[in-house]
Length: 205
Image (cartoon, rainbow, N blue to C red):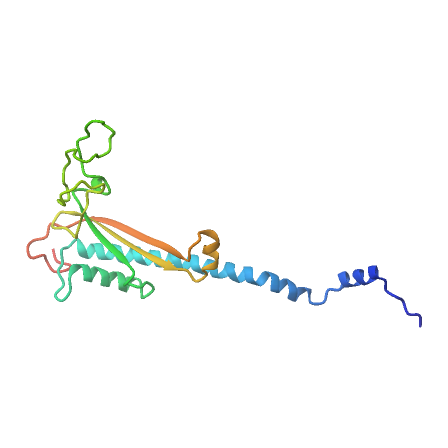
């Protein structure tokens, strides 16, 4: 039997023609990106789900707050936080959640500055010393006229909630945004009911 010697070129051709282990090699190369994509999709779904729960909890809490209902053992603020906690089914750390309540004269005033009289140099921005209407009663001009609190009967109250959600796959957001968390936020504005003193029980007329 005649032996055929393989030249260097022949060895290369033979190596290139070998298909053994190709599937395993391709899987090893592609798998990390596939797993990263899958966990990224799961992260996105969780972010949307948790944000939806926060919005729902805040909306329910605002319905409680607008009635003026005073719980027997806890404050209105604590009752609102408890409702948000129950709505988010333990997915958020309530020690890290920020809940704010701001009172405004009307819905149209939400987020607006306190009125002021623009004087020389008439730049349409507030300058120290210009007369202004102290809407929130804190003795200084504010770029947001809202006052902190849950308000009284007939007040317009803006409820806001924010939370930094830690992602499961920090590598992907680090590549895209440079961080490992996503800031979730929701808000709702309501007008308090014209409750009597003391306020009626929850669900009362």
